[in-house]
Length: 222
Image 1 (cartoon, one colour):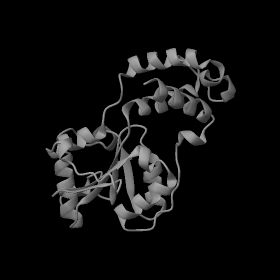
Image 2 (cartoon, helix red, strand yellow):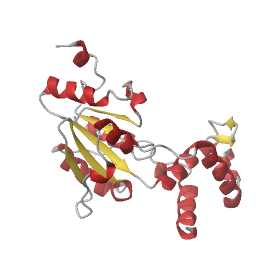
Image 3 (cartoon, helix red, strand yellow):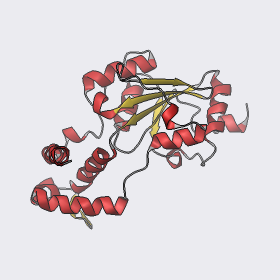
């Protein structure tokens, strides 16, 4: 067996959850692992120590090693929704944008500022980060395919794309964010029973009220 296969960061898993920031990657990965399906997650190739341009060769090495293609799960979420979610998760630990607070969450920005004042801080946050990249675009670039060519069935809320180098499964965050929908989707993808294990979910944090309020105001003002 070649060093290429032995040293591949993909060699010990069955599924790679390669999905954009704030798309339930940790929940999906933890649920798969807890159910006996080996998985890891990443947002970029840097997260799994694969140089740009080498992803396809790593997938090919995986196929040679396991005699099957790696399963890849990617979730699409509205980019503005992702920014709002990221902001409130960060702001829940801010005494100010330049000062972290780990204790006493009631002193954080989201619990002290008015909605209008938070809106200004949020706008500054957006300008600083200028959005987050889309993992699906990275995947398609590495595989030499166009995003528009990928299959997704609205009626099934799932896209199954079989490539020579991988099995790429697509989900929409607004559909699978409900646990009752996510579990069955993961079971269809893996062919096994999945016990959901939530991780890093905004609705379960102290910031949930502010998050819901922000999402509502963003949607109604668009």
